[in-house]
Amino acid sequence: MGTQSTHANFKKIRRHDGIFQERVHDAYKAKGKLLEPTVCIGCGAVFHEGRWQWRQVPVDAHKQTCPACHRIHDHYPAGFVTLKGEFFRAHLTEILQLIHNVEKHERAEHPLKRIMEIEEKGDTALITTTDIHLARGIGEAVHHAYQGELNYHYNPEENLLRVTWTR
Image (cartoon, rainbow, N blue to C red):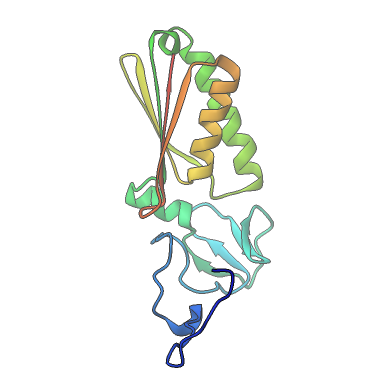
């Protein structure tokens, strides 16, 4: 079984043949390369050197909405973080401060990582984010600081992450 044989009528299919489906479908990801520089008309982030950054807006910049502002406008989060439990309710203020600090740190380097909304109800809060990595980072930071139970559920077809922390 160590040797490989190729049938005479077998044609190798390469990725550029156009028949493969993309692994992760993200409607908010640019279909092609953006012109540089491009400034987001919502938040002022600049697409430069292949990524969105916080920088001085060039005078000749093209204008377009960045993926994060697009998600916020459409109310379509990439990440959901659910925090719940009696401990959470008792330490709500300090846990929310930690979460805002995580976002502030991430957003400073990555303009597309943002908290969209924090919704509190009883001993539960739901935090929606524009990026799956920010949702994961929030969950990990809360778990590192306060222990508890941390669970992830990633849906690759929708590029969606659900994080649940309980204590």
